Amino acid sequence: MKIIRMLGRSIRDALKSVCRNFSLSLASISCITITLIIVALSILASFNVQNFTKEIESDLTIIAFMDNDATEEDISTMKKNIKQIENIDSYIYEDKEKEKENMAETSDVFATVTKGWSKEENPLRDKFEIKVKNIQKIGQTAKQIQKLDKVAVVRYGAGLVERLVKAFASIQKIAYGVVLALILVTVFLIINTIKLTIFSRKREISIMRLVGASNFSIKTPFIIEGMILGLIGSIIPVILTTFGYLAFYDHFNGYLFTKIIQLISPEPFIYQASGIIVIIGIVVGMIGSASAVRKYLKV
Amino acid sequence: MDLIRLKNVYKRYKNGVTAIYNMTLSIKKGSFVFVIGGSGSGKSTLIKMLYREEKPTSGQIVVGGVDVARLRNKKVYKLRRKLGIVFQDYRLLPKLTVYENVAFAMEVIGATKNETRVKTLKAIELVGLKNKVHNYPDQLSGGEQQRVAIARAIVNNPKLLLCDEPTGNLDPDMSMEIMKVLEEINQKRGTTILMVTHDKDIVNKMKKQVVTLKDGRLVNNQEKGTYDDEDN
Image (cartoon, rainbow over all chains, first blue to last red):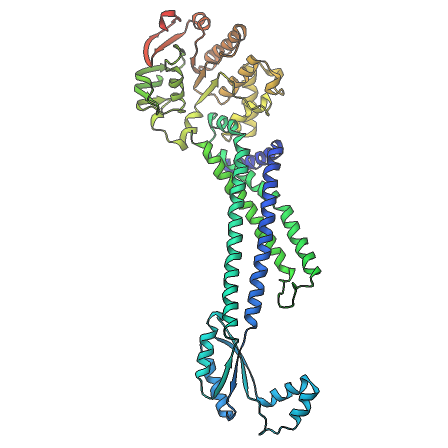
């Protein structure tokens, strides 16, 4: 009962104090707002980078052409063998007849040329289009496929793919690093701003101690106040994230510069990002005021 | 019954200054005690140790059954709830009214609304500020502000009231008013009062127990004592 009463008082005091120390609250809130906007931008950017690198990675395929004299039996053993390679996610098999049709569709010239080929004369080859699970091991997997019976040629863009994968890995690492660094900077900035707010109320805290308030009951209102400041501070960043991203997405029709760079579709992405921003704001506000007030409780 | 008991207390600050030497002192429940002495005599250190702003370097201090020297930082509030403290500079919260300042001391210890109201009004009435409950501290005179501070100190009926030069900033007339209030609290409520001062007139007029300190040592402790110049 007493705890509930104290908690109620803490929340009331926190709200009162946000209003009474309005100019300082405003300073904390604007500091939180500005830093959270930067964090929000970096979150949007890094998630998108991550998304499109994944998209591109998942488009990478190994193509294996079979020997010209491969029989249907050879093909079915190949299908069995391919399943046993660990890193293989899925494959599509197309025989040379299908290949011929595909080719014929691309232009009239090809259509005329391929018409003359009978089934035995068809110079094209049966092929497997293979997707892998772990893109970093694509080279190794290609070698394993090459070793299988009746496989003539394996192509996966050797060299280019490795460089691309390496670049994407470092881009992701950099993106994570930037977000993490920004969050740390935010915490630091917010802790310092809240410290200023609390410093101006050193006297109040010392009087609370003198009249017999327990450390818990002194700390709680400040922590709740920090959470409120964080919450209020995250309003503008959330609005900017939501509407800004929607406008951005619409303006570029969902991709940036080329169709390869796909943007993440706004729903539910913006809600997730907003949630993350609100949580960062609240937690950081809480940590900030908790660590700032602790200093004054050591008398 | 002794409310305060000091036994072989030493206090040495970190900068090497020794403020209290081997002090042994008992103060009875319900008494009114002046602590006097010149600058640097250790009277402020003594009162600070009683409310655990400072810890003694060695020796034992018991206040109202609480072993102050061993009290952990987190538990200090338990001691503070047993005593009221009044300072020379009032230490009121400027943004709260008289009523709120006094009620503050009740609220922070988790009292109910009703209890807070009743006790706060009673304390304000006792110090004679009934008609100023809704004023802010900067609308009051120094003496009135000090009376608010006293009301705040006694609102939860402490056994002990510690006063650190409460009349230090006040003119003689106002000082006497404050002394009247303190005397009334001592008589009516039976609150033990320990007051640090260097105001000779007050000490000589009140004729109470006087504890004299000199260079950190207890040199005199007498009933109905006076403030003599040679004590300094």
